Amino acid sequence: MNDDPIPISLVANYMFCPRRAWLEAVGERVDSAQMSQGTYDHRKVDCIAGADDSDDYRAVNVRHEVWGVAGRLDAAKMTDEGVIIREYKATPVKRAMIVTDAMRTQLALQAACLEDMGFRVAGAEIFFTTHHRNVEVELGSEDYERAHTAVKETRALINSDSAPEPLEDDARCMRCSHVGVCLPEERKLTSVRHRVMVTSPDNQVTHLATPGAKAFSRAGRMVVLKNGEEIASIPLDTIQGLQVHGNTDLSSGLMRELMWRDIPVLWCSGTGRLYGWTMPSYGPNGSARVQQHVASHEGRLGLAREFIVAKVHNQSVLLRRSDRSNPVLEQLLLIEKTVRNTNRWQDVLGLEGKAAALYFSQFGMLIKQDKREDWPWTARMKRPAPDALNSLLDYTYSLLLSDCIRALISCGLDPHAGFLHSSKRNKPALALDLMEEFRAPVADSVVQTVVNNGEVSPDGFIYSLGSSVRMSDMARKSLIGAYERRMQTELTHPIFGYKASWRRIVEIQARMILGYLDGTQQTYRGIRIR
Image (cartoon, rainbow, N blue to C red; front, side):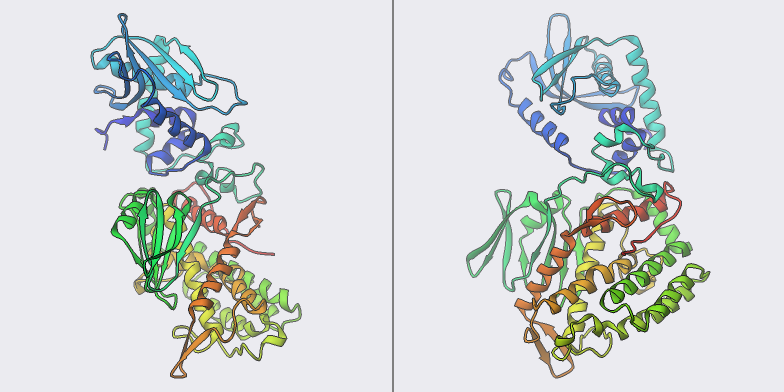
């Protein structure tokens, strides 16, 4: 709403980069070493010696009614001449203590707010916490004019219907905390000259797969008990996502804590069927999500084609790695070329079905010859799985679907509004779209690995009435472990040329869909392995 006050921090971000301000305004939140240091330093500010002095104030809320801007002062000191504003900034040690235009604008806005509230401002200063040095900043009329103009421009930006274009080959991107969600160079779908530094690389998806276990939060950790005995204790700060398998309970306190931390929780059955997920009510990119639903209703054939072109290509590569003379490779190559020039959504689906039939007719060839007798393969048959290999595929596809859902949620897209799969089936259509290009290089590859390496035994399956099969608890945990190793494996990105894990690549592709929908990217290109 136009009447809502604009945060001062958002105006400062606008001065640094309009697209970063846009990302902040649409709800994109990130963490970085410098931001974490700043948060820690601000926490120390509230406990600084001398805080009991009646003339010293911490975390002071201020607002300018006329300009429509609001914010918070780190610290303020009352003197006979007026209020002295102090801001705390964390700066890398090797970088000089430079007061940037964004910092000056922030101070000018804080000073203007205080004056609008009836206080006289006697001075402003910035304390660089990394260097432990204080720098005085003299504000002039031009600073106030620039600050007022920046407020107007920021309001116009956040009320705009389209996202601003990313910066091109700009040094600011190299030290921006939002580069991992903005992806400024990736939007061109060419090799990236500067490596993207992704935050929180050590955080992992945690799986609760022990039947009868109970998990709850305690002192910043997720504690897991079974029969009254502690079997796991994990810091909540290291959890990127939580997946619950089968009969495992979560306390309401733990679920609430995970939602506060924007950590999605996904539930699946003991056989791997995904039942649902929880997420906070607030998420980023609400406007883009509306555009997504409109585009899903109208159809985007280019997206649908690219999902299947990448899928068929990756199926061909996986078969070729096992047998370069496989008889279906030429047919798959022809289908891949045909899909590129298809002009009807129905034809794309028909060709995808034909390619899947050819690929799965040869899936047994991915298993080592000396193991094929113990791992018989007839055809791809979905739930209930009639044999061990189909059971492994079903479960691994559910794990991959969960990762695709997490990636889409992280950038604010609706997993249900798709472009290839129909939303009328009441399934997470866009997540199913996104996972198509990852089925062969991730899920199928994991199944091939656990069988050929003997990580899962043919004895690790339970047969029911001769018509369905499910994994034992040990086999399921072995499969989940192999899948997580695969998702954490780093490879050179086929398009952008830098190293990234498979899980990060899934998120990058989700953001490529977002870029296509918000107009900052002309086309979408799927992942093609070599």
